[in-house]
Image (tube, rainbow, N blue to C red; front, side, top):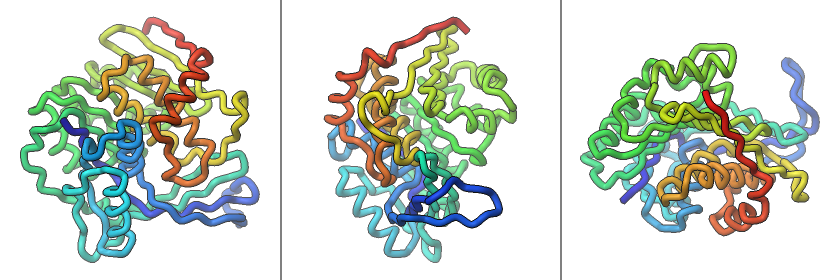
Length: 318
């Protein structure tokens, strides 16, 4: 059975800045790194590196008719991702992102969607689907994939970005066997049109009462909300400094979290373990600069075994 991932494929230009960003001022970069990323590509890579089973992930998306598009598809193939549903869009560039990394590792990402924005794929039946992971594909494509997931009784994980859609446009998720939304706190507030995390959570539960929330909160860890159990679970972030590591870039950490959470649930880990593994993987990614410096299964498991006592679970009723 297959995990389908759909989202953006970008070429990333990563600039390490000498000083913090100040709006309206010039900034000087001390290092330039060119890599491949985009939320979809990052999530697919995180999943296949954790599961370590070639062909278990099939990507649905688009690249441009340029050298970057061809190179990215070959790179995903080398990772073990099934690329048969990646299409090349004529006369469109592959998506592009400028990643500005400030001292301390905080990353600001500016994206140009390119081929991602005009992506259209003839899906067929997809009757081998076990799990669908959506990371901002064109909304029409997302609806088609959600319909396929519902027909095959597959679980759905949605990792939305700001500007992708609104909570009211995701009501099709109500019919899903399993629905997990995995935004960060700012993305959830944008999605719901609210200005506080508390209001965003309760708006989501009102509109999508059957969906669970895995809210990524950066250095605060993750907040998991399960309306079926009327319960919230808080898990702290990986204590990077305590284990002798240093944050280099936050870019790609959320994607890594979503990918490893999806992979662990696919493999049958229990919920708390899946969340803890995802937190550990995201923490490892934060200590690395390149977008695709996503940890492999062995790294995640080894560090998880070392630090799991530090990832104490706090439960509370809604």
